[in-house]
Length: 567
Image (cartoon, rainbow, N blue to C red; front, top):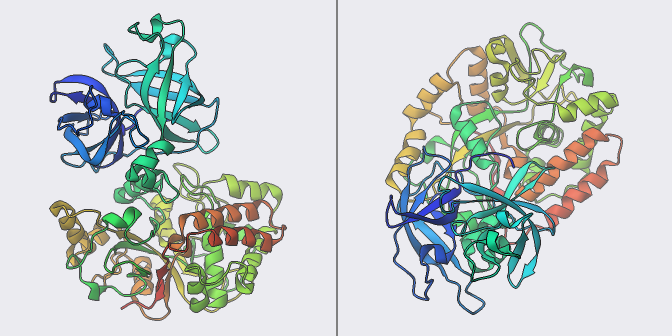
């Protein structure tokens, strides 16, 4: 069932930190927990209780417990009427930003196996049961167990009902345990001839709790974002955290706070301060950046300034998160160098259709390069990790190739061989060239503020400061676009810094990073299909992506100003 430990599986107590265990809950955000109303108040009266609950992260003792009360609008006890479903949302007295929230899902399938972890009497440390989704019981869903011993019991109320998608290797919380049913005069389900469990499905909870609707909907939090942020703060070389823009006043935008006075805007220009239609300014600031549209090679083996065959290229599509992005970087770079900044910007922001001749041409150029390889080579491109074998020195030092089209973060892949790597602009080496350098693609890790806490504001102010940016460059080898902070390191680092801060050619944010999530995912899928079948008609792949783009809500804003010259 995947990870044995999860921050979001919550144990609840009443009566203080040493009070009785009364049930379970699910962490929705850093300061909200979902549970059943009768866990908070056994009577579950109409009036909202003032009960002080105690929230424990039972599977991660490193996160301190915290008190909680029913959140405003979070009391929906089990009374007759369509708007009452035995639900309570608790507000933590202080947030726990280090805790991983639950991955919510709305999909239900009859016969699907589920896992449930609760805290029944004598099992305060946890007890696990399994079952299968059976069918509807009004707005609830019946769960059937293999035996009566596996039916939920007191202490399981509010527990997450989990499923696992084996193909995608992801888990989802699809419901909340609400009760069991058998011979009601008997105390335990094991004493009954017939007993089964009920859950409130996430899709029903979403109808009643706007926060759950938000988190479980198509614009919910990216399931890989927290992992990417942890990796990013650890300093490992990874592509940038991506933008996700939602309509003003809804979704994540509802909690975004202005960064005005937390950094000096004059030290940043386009494309580092992109705007979005219908959204306020100064909602994000770049903390670290990477240069793309470059090709890495081994020192002393500088390539000739004309296109190289597939056999020369180090290439792989695999990634822990979104496989396919290394291929999207190729296509984005080809569009940029073939058609220039203006058309690239129109395409990236949704103003130019995917089936435009320039997009078809760029994609076809890359497909023709892939077609040079054998089926075995293309299978390896799909299966191999873009960072190279674990414990190695990246694809460039051990992959049997000479050139790697990868961002400046690729240095971290090379380990202690990084000092032997050099780079050049990609334009002359791309298939179909040689091209002149029209612009450089770049990626950035942006910080945003989701609350008004003093510590959070101080952190943003510190991270964006000239002092911290310079210190990060010295210690972590990262690049800053703060115009007051020069690049640290040797000739390679200074050359990257010059391209990031110089005005020789424009810089354009990675197109897939600024696209709506659904469009970006369709882009990656089409990339992988092209790797597998480079001879298939390109236009059909692009028509499929265009259909996804056309299906995006008209109210969904798009970023503007994703290209520009540094200050």
